[in-house]
Amino acid sequence: MVDITSKLYRGGMKAGTAFFSRQNEELEYLFNRNITNVGSTRGVIGLYGLVDMQFNTVNMAGTYQDGVDSGRLIIANTSASPIFVTNFVHDAFDAMATYYNVAKQHNKIRANAGFLVDMKIKRGYESINNSHEAYMQTYFQAFTDYLNSRGLVEKIRNFKEFMHHFENFIYQVVTENPVTRTGFTRSIYSNILNGGLAIEIENISKSRENLKVTDFYENPNFDNYSKIANHFGFVVDRDVPWRLLANISSPRMQLFMQQHGVTKMGLFDQYYVKTSTLDVDILIKHAATFYNTYVAREPETTRPELVFNQNCPTKGSYLGSISTGTLKIKKLARTTVSKEGAIADYGVKHWVKLYFKLRLAEEKIDISTAQANSLLQSIYSRSIKNNSIDLALGVFYSDLEIKRRITVEL
Picture: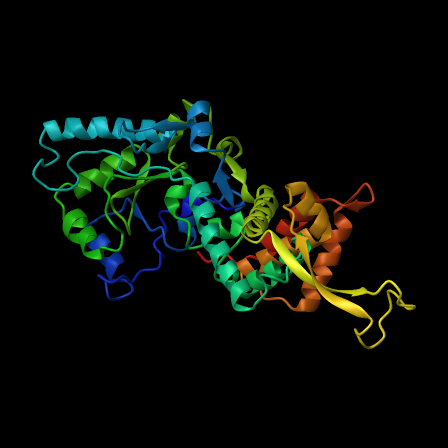
């Protein structure tokens, strides 16, 4: 069992930023100032809220509206652009902000310090659904360019032929450009705010390294800010000190969780969904959508056809010459495909194979073709249900084999 939160306080974090030139300089700086309630979100900690206690990749369940309707999400502002926050994170921060304001009234917080004066949430939970959808649109445009550059647009007659070229394309780019929801969630294209366990109290680009020292670490309010955050179950992100991480291992944070009927061990079952259960449905949806968009743009294709004269004695045969017939260009209408049609046309076995090979590439798992094929045969045999391969089982066993081979860098 991997408890990500237990690693928030580890000292062996990777250091070395644009501001701190030496590898250990940043840690030495924090140590000398006695700043202890900070944790880095580099490496595996960047997946906080995006993996569960068993290191399964997860997303928060449902849409923003689903979260609000169920009470899992709270809207933290009243502006036209709502800020969504996980309910217990919101409650913990609300209590922290109240305490912080009292401390300010008693001159424990300096009101003229610039930053770290007022506690307000500026960024909260950001759904990965929207960012993945936008990302996949760029994927489709890249694939369209790929088809055009190779003169393939006119040659594709149906969904199966489309998938042949789509498969060739994604195998070339997927190592650095993930396709599946799991791969996308675990990649540089996601961020810790997608996990629902982090909030930010300022709208500042994290690339502005100098600010975290001049306006935060050197801020006269920082020590009390970090101590008050710790008191209410938060950890200050060492790399982005205006970001707070809800430490679900903290007894104080667990009190806020319990008020919503959730425990540390039950959190990911109640609020999240394993991305492996979403992957193939999303992959099929995107493939069908891409193809149907392609059909809308190119509704017809053409094919040469030899039409023989009616009095030709060898009608329907090839005589080595077209002198007895006429070569005509026949127009063929392309038809759209449904999700069910996409599964049937491409075949369940092909979908399982595609998913498994994509996940291997996304995780950069280096195994031979023979090993991959052997694993696939094992996955096929374990996925038989009612005398045929079951897609859900195929995905389950594919995910299991992938997870066994993932190397986690702490």
